[in-house]
Image (cartoon, rainbow, N blue to C red; front, side, top):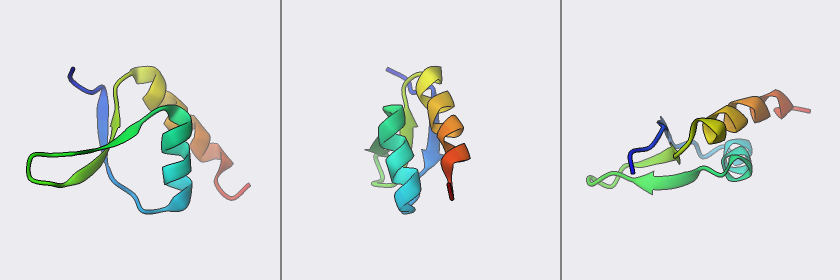
Length: 56
C-alpha cells in the first residue's frame, strides 16, 4: 500500500508523541533511512492538528 504522506523523521519527543497519537509509524527506506509514514489523510491531518499543543 502506498503511503498518503511521508516526512523526515524527527527525534523531538513531542513529534514522536503526536506521531503515535495520530496513528502514524516510523518506516525505513531500502537504503535504511527512517521517515514518518502516514497511510491515510486522516492520520496526517491529526498529526498536523496536534502541533497546536506544542508548548501548551
